[in-house]
Length: 197
Image 1 (tube, rainbow, N blue to C red):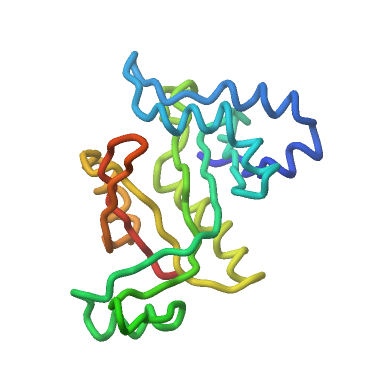
Image 2 (cartoon, rainbow, N blue to C red; image 1 turned 135 degrees about the vertical axis):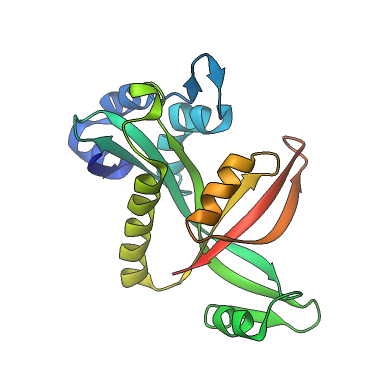
């Protein structure tokens, strides 16, 4: 169950960087001795504060009703290319509210919200103190607030191609696959999923 949601900037202002850093060190993606997502864990512990300071993203901490860190999500804003091929006319019409179609490439260019990191803290009740759907509801609530202040209506995220459990979860949350990419850095294939809100 959700208790409260705090952004890193608000926590830095209220409790200071040392306390925030200590809080972030309690975040773990290890469940029953298995590392579920080392990338998310490393980002939260080592980079989330710095990314905020550099104005690259903002990480939010979601506490459970017992005030324990139950999960996190990180948001930013980024340009994204969305291939028009295979889209229905209705889908194209929806996308055109937020994006421009490049007639030469057949690709929509949009400015969209990116859910850059998303995960439960398995150090608390083995990740059972919050449901994934609750964490996504928190994420979308913050995005709705941002939308009211600055506009926009597209949100996307990336999912490792072999992570079918995460993929199925995002589909259940209303995201739709729109593209793929290969990362030279981590030698990984990613599926890109998008939602209009």
